[in-house]
View 1 (cartoon, protein in one colour):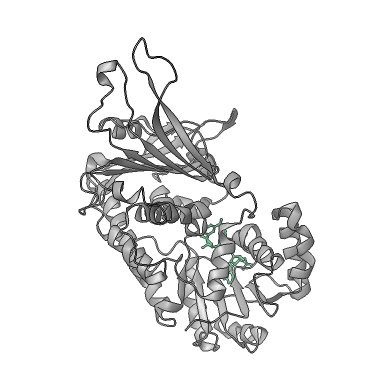
View 2 (cartoon, protein in one colour):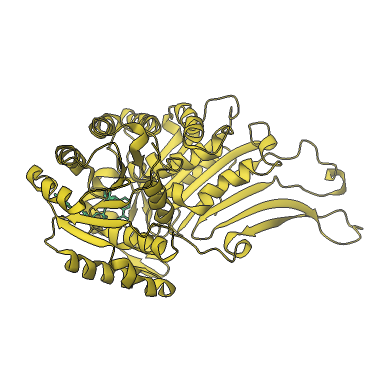
Length: 479
Ligand code: NAP
């Protein structure tokens, strides 16, 4: 049933995500007239606040995190906000929450921006207080479990109260413009799709590099590590979008059907196809930074870096490696996808001394949003000493190409889709579970072969073994 919610109930309303992303996104949607005048937003967390107190809290967050041009929108937005204190572990408190939400006319959208350990009691409380009715949908933040078994447990708990068509699992990468643009690039242009296969693509690289370290996420990160924090969700979603077959239409079922097929086709990685690392003290941008164990205050085996040579075992991608790499305290903050095409089958210029380089498509996701296609061109001249060919790049910088539209936070798109009920950019249960199944198998390979993190210096591109992982195949990481 498609309905537009007229109330948004936000759990974890005082948290970091709410302050930095959710409140600014909702305020921006409001400023642009994208949500109905009737939309009420009810925040909840344990902190004892009343409506006025929460509005003051939200005002401070918005003053901090909204760009200046949006700030005039803050005051009118605050009027939408209400607040009810609640410990989600206290079942009795949900009746007051339901009273605060009040009668909902069109529908209720709930967003759980709390630790997943609270999902079960929260859902039980929602059911008992009548807040999980047919006109309620629920959005869930990651992490959805730490392995397949715990993920299933969470999914079972949620699906005991909500059918799949009313569960919205968030992977905020899917809210990013350039990630959606990958689909436009592949499926709204005629020239890429005929080449998008093993016959013409040599390999694909996906890099998610961060310069930050633990950033106060000590408790969470050390129990998770780079594989669960980044690869399980964001990187596998990117891989699925690159590798999937063309869906018949841009709708939730068609797109997710194609992604899940890719995720299920991932081959178990072998011992020599994965490298893990952990940063030691070094320098980022000229400033000294401590090592992971120093930040943590104790020794740890948690990986802050992982590189994997993955394979999608299907007809289209036979023999095409997908090199995945992510880490903290790396040289540069960059998220990008590199599609490396094969060389031309025969160079007609070889006899004239010219060398051709294979084409390369680079899709920059952050911080720069751009798409660059490298092509071979002839250097101008009379060619008396032979023909010279050079790579030139066809560059589309998204902010330049689309100067008008505002740059939006990924959560703006996702919150609006949650309110309006469009699941296309949310992750379905079978996808999450296929992702975990593969991630568990990677961890199993680490365990079976006693693969432990190699050290790397903060500010580098990770352990040298990760460079060797690609170089063994004659591949250089794109940097
Ligand atoms: P956070 O800063 O620790 O906030 C947690 C929120 O939950 C706070 O509002 C907290 O308020 C509330 N809370 C804690 N215990 C509660 C309880 N027993 N009952 C009711 N409310 C309770 O966490 P966060 O960074 O905002 O992250 C929220 C979720 O999003 C987590 O699952 C996280 O993994 C995920 N996530 C976060 C980010 C990010 O950038 N921050 C990114 C991706 C995913 P009180 O203490 O007042 O109760």
